[in-house]
Image (cartoon, rainbow, N blue to C red; front, side, top):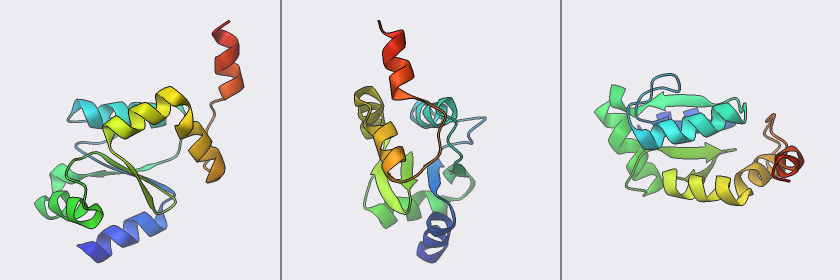
Length: 116
């Protein structure tokens, strides 16, 4: 399973291991991260861990992180729902996407102009 997970992460710039799918999340935390990625129009690969007990346990062991969802960007584990929420709120997630050359259609400047 470890090799399969490595292959998925290596072949996709952004991967979300989640409960359910991007279009039909099976938990609120997975839905939140999928929703953020969709809002920012980030191209991401979703893996439904509910399809396989091996995958569900394997990804937890792979990262040594006990919960799902788990977001990877350019082969790097970024975090779960709480961390991603904090990064969205602080603007750090968009900065991360920019630093990793991940295409998105969201402009920090545009968002700041609408707050005026």
